[in-house]
Length: 439
Ligand code: C2O
Ligand code: CU
Ligand code: CU
Image (cartoon, rainbow, N blue to C red; front, side, top):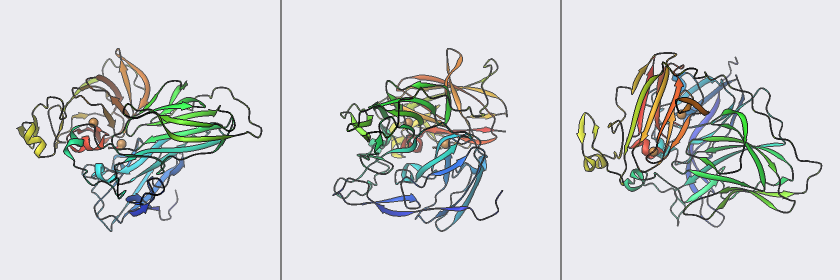
């Protein structure tokens, strides 16, 4: 209820040391000149007010990813607001209805602007947060840099990458640092908030010297904390909240390990362990308090929608419609379109569906391509539907593997125009973007 001027978030150019020592510094675009930008932290139910000041050479906007807010604050340039021109400002003002780990990022030319560094964490604390010794937000990212100069590779529109797995970087960072280390004491209990802000990289993660539980995904608490014994797959835009106990001995190093098929397992974050003062092992954590997202209830009367994803250079790219014309692969590629949703290689004036408030929706997502896609719905969380029933946690981004069909359901309870797109951002730009209208 304060009437003072909102805090300022300036989007600007800056020079930072991303690559390991001995390499040149990198010129980025960042909020307050940092990548990740400053963490915004509020309590559940509190108001977030930020004035975006655009000091970049091109228009921009901020999207608050995963937060169920008023459509006018969703920050999608060209759909929910006009992009903020260089030298101009825009005031974002909303209440954070749910606790959890969210993030904010540019939503104008996002395949370029997010890759240049325009993203940051948005943390909404529970009224009564779980008891831990320490909390760390870990922003996982990758950068595509020129190996000689460490400057950002500006071939954002590279057709090979766009039509394949997207823009995968050659320098992996955590909180903007290469290979960081977080010293801990044995038996420390940590809450780790993981956020994948990369353009296209899927992070398969594992714990070593740490015992952990997943307590929330995409900000939404799991009904029961799940022991993290196998691999945690974090697709672009996804988040995971972990409660982790340091089990490695003093003098050892625990790791958040990154697996990869082209790579040997590597350390994403190292935790050098020292002797503990007076810490002892603890029991499994309790579940986080639930958020207020509408349950799906019965699906009997749910509206069925179908979304068929096609395209990519390695599959048979079906022809698709662009600007009212049906074009073949060559013509689409020449116009920078490599993907299609329901045969449309662009986001059109018409929504995928007109929904009415309170409607239950089931959306079948058919991935006909030979690539995985990270499908994200703005403004509302969904649940997966398996065998005709809601199953698994609430999410805002779902990884759909190559050739796989998955079904999600949600209650259309937030009026406005909401995007549904692949969060591999060059895919979104080259055809994998649509929207629903809810009135
Ligand atoms: Cu985080 Cu439309 O995206
Ligand atoms: Cu979003
Ligand atoms: Cu995709």
